[in-house]
Length: 314
Image (cartoon, rainbow, N blue to C red; front, side, top):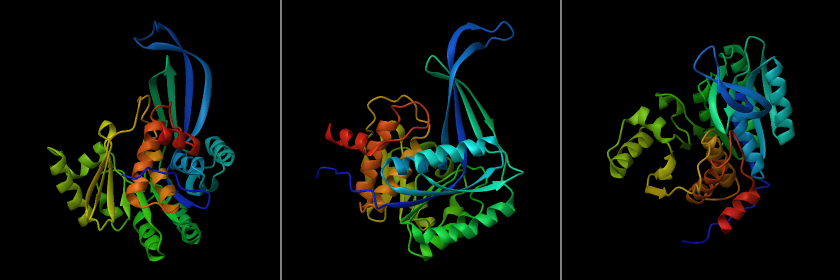
């Protein structure tokens, strides 16, 4: 097998569309149990904010050297302002539709002694009219990009996903989808779906072995008219299913610290490498290395080109 090389990614243009969130982290010390209930008391010493969901996909694409636009719906609130600022600092071209009736999704994680103790979610669903307005922007943006990524976190931002897939394919753009839920028929016609192991089980049921997995995955791929299906399998690596068969890659993680956001890194890496000229197998292998790096970091994190090159050289 030829040595894997990182391509030149500076000319890659990625459009990410989907559900965004603001990831907030409160870090503190835990030295006692509350007298009010059997729960730890966390004395918060510092806090951090990071773009999450589709915003983390976009941030990963930029970290890997690509140009990236992000199209999404947020509230008209302070978390949306924080997201806009963070995306600007990351170099993402953000197209944020504001919906006054929407609360921008926040995932607040309380961390004590390097362990996540609690997660609190704040969210609701965007207004349909705002989503429909987003579709016009989508049609204008797609032709300006090489690859489209649809990042579905089930928050309502991809209500028109079928129209989005159909339009991108009409104008010759590959569409990569990170799916959610049990109904994958809405993703019919996409170039590639990237479910993780547990997400795929919700759709095709439990498999007995790799042969059974391939049978079920290929049946789903054919049913949905996908070019390919990539299943991320945690400690078992990744499996890519195409019409000409399956390709398996073992895990690259040296140490798993936090898997949150790993799927974002995988689909961002795939998109960037495909836009930079890699074939699908090369892109999968590079994204597998990127995922192995990011799970060694805390929270929603990114992988840089330098980190990826060092990993490949080791």
